[in-house]
Length: 198
Image 1 (cartoon, rainbow, N blue to C red):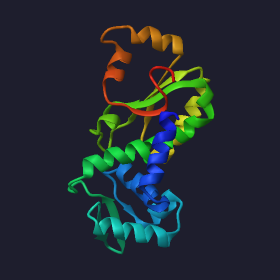
Image 2 (image 1 turned 90 degrees about the vertical axis):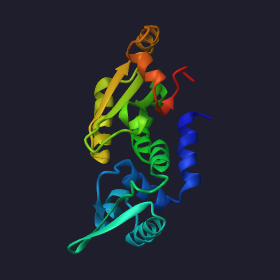
Image 3 (image 1 turned 45 degrees about the vertical axis):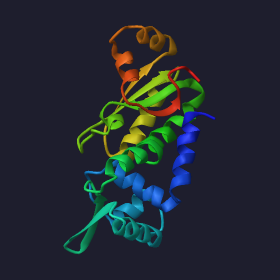
Image 4 (image 1 turned 180 degrees about the horizontal axis):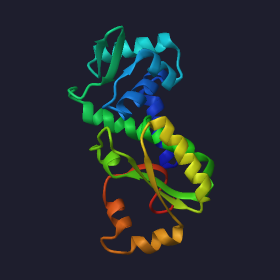
């Protein structure tokens, strides 16, 4: 069973569908606040189910709720004692990773490795941080560019990808202190494949 299958199943096992969608949105973009109608539209779930999940998550201290005029806004609660752990877990299972994995799946047979690196993987991203994505494979770049643009729209942030052929990846991996070596020794959120090509 591949890493991508495992992380997808983990998200499903840990969270119900509506909770997974709400946490995936709010914890993938923790510096943004959303009102109910926005959340319902983004997660494509029924308003009643979303309202129930928001109430449970606010009551548990995982989200904050703030009235602004006639609208109530929700956001990830950075003061929650498990914020860092939950943020990391959501990014790896149902947030950022699911969106990127979803747009890359049509190219799965042509990809030996796809992973997020940089501030998103390290958990140090801010509201203005982009997403750094490494793709190793024989994917047609124009098709990849279109897929990444789709992910950018959903994530509401820029995705900067680096596409390497397997041969380039192997060559650059041997360079001490080089770009690929730095990526592989830092934190990664695996999406498809693995650095070993499995």
